[in-house]
Length: 172
Image (cartoon, rainbow, N blue to C red; front, side, top):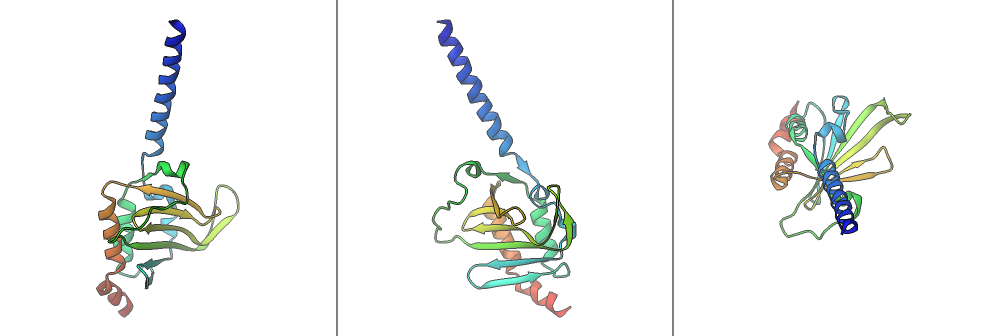
């Protein structure tokens, strides 16, 4: 009888540790966790759908609202990062695609040694699946999700496609 109790206690302890790890791993994280160099941004390069693309410098009217949206959102790492890194589900009829690349021109020292510059990170909505890609460290991909993810993706896409803001930025 005592042996059976010890086995159950061990099983429950392992289960509790697993649940606590999952809660910790998927905790909400700020944008700066994934991209700590926002104050050094020189430009955003963006793509959407099949043919849309734009370079968005800090003086473009879309830059500030896009950065405010990205920085005000809490991201949760997906547990799929631990097992199914590069697998995507099929796209559905109304799904969309967009990508934002972050450009830094001045080299920045990194903790692992060396310096970085150029396109150092991407945030991508690949037909409903959000992922950060760290281009500094061998193209590491981190899938993320959030509360009301569809509204977030739609808001980013709306900012990127805002032709009125784009044409005002070109007139400056």
